[in-house]
Length: 137
Image (tube, rainbow, N blue to C red; front, side):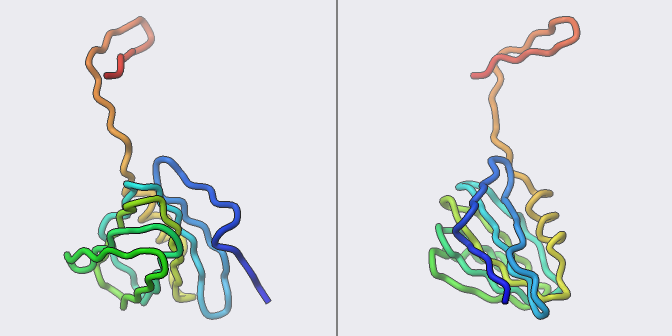
C-alpha cells in the first residue's frame, strides 16, 4: 500500500505554481499543484487523458477558449490534446491524475515556463559605479 496527503506539508511558491508528485503507482501518477491567488498555467495540451480535482480553493479553468469556474470538490476529466489553462482565483490545492505514460516533468514545465511575476513600477533609476539602483513607486 502507498499513501500520501493532499493537506500535509503545503509549500506554496510565490512566483509559480508548486508541483509535487504524491503517488506513482503501476497505473497512474497523482500530482498536487498548489497555486497562489493570481498564478496561472497558460494554455497547454496533454498527450494523455487527465483528471483534475479542486481539493481546496477556486480556479478559472479554460477549455477550448471557454472558461469554467471550478471550486472545492469539483472534478473534471479531459481527453488528450484538449487545450486548457488554469488561473487561481484564490489560493488553491489541485489534484491532478495522470496516466502512467504521462510525465510529471511535462506538468512542471508548464507550471514553471509560464510564470506570472509580480509587476513593479519604477519612478526613478540612477547609476552608481558597479550597480544600477531603482526606487520603487
